Length: 526
Image (tube, rainbow, N blue to C red):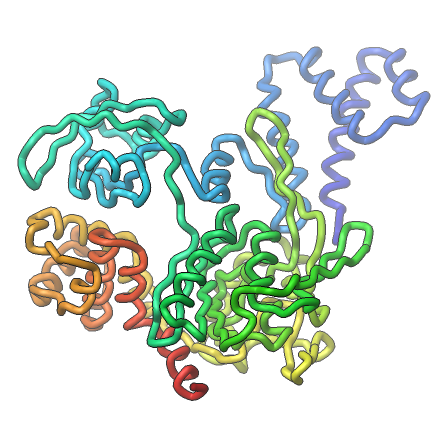
């Protein structure tokens, strides 16, 4: 990699340091040049001199953060500096839990309006319901204050076993209620599953968090008890996470001794990680779904199962990240995520995309796949014959830029259509659904999620009229011709708010081209 920019940064810092000492104290110059010191010590001295001698008052913490951030930015695209204020959210997501009362909400007319009460959270146990308005928390008025969502979250979160006193307005009964809710750990699930068809289990894995391995095993065991002999593993839009969790999940599918991943340290040492045997799903057909946002640990799993001829990979070319990061604390809550190794799939291929043209070009490449036609045809995917590898059963796979699926799911080059599809599946529809449910929740009182899923959506024409008006009010342009997809999205978000993520997925998948392709392959390979 070209380190000129990094060297330039250090040279500038040292030049400033030497210029200062030459101009102010010749003895310091003599001492500084009479013996050799490490570069890290030079930087420490540089900061110390600025702190004690600079002509104006300066925020040293801010300066140090900028130096670190600028230095990290000269490295690869995945080495990053993470300020303390961002670390808490990242840690919660990767730990798989947070401490709070366990609700998700919208700010509706300056009022905290509960959209969902999270499973296994304190609010669920206390009897708080979707649609409830939180007016006061510990004598802190939350309504009519133009408060940001971030400030509301800060108020509702806190230390475990601390109590927050809530005054709530329940719109359904037009009553004011008081709740004393003890804050506690609220799970942030990363794994969801259900029976896609008879004998076929479906698992969605949205990130590789600390709890994901246990969640995956639990869900897989439940599906096997329901008769699952085949499995669809959905890694679409999964940005990655912990490498050891990716290894743990891969191990469930491979027999003892099969290579799962090869890592190479900064000293060039390679190490092969092999399956331990006795995995939960070493037999039975496996289909893995990926797209352009499937990255890192997702690619580890997909690559291992593809290279071992253990799964059919379905979808579109994955992101292309073959680097391993280690998160290193810097103090005061700050951290850096530093690339410390490369990884290779079992056949020995690196799926890391080139990043020699800079970070902007590197991340823009995903969008450029529309321009090159790759989104529409597999033949447009760039391949390098010098990076061709052969799996044990003779499948041709390529390195150099993500995992190329065995079965391609084409998209549209019509960006207007892609925009419409994005909006239809976005949080805008979720907000619209909340408003519709909030008008009269008794209209959607179903005995079970199965009952809701099987019952046709009522008032379809009215819902379409209302959502068109809603989009206009939000200033969002959308083609309303695809009524089937719009109604599917409305019903899926209703399922999410009334029931859970599994119900959401079951409805969404009836209009999912990736799932439809998978069902075709399942029918062809009974």
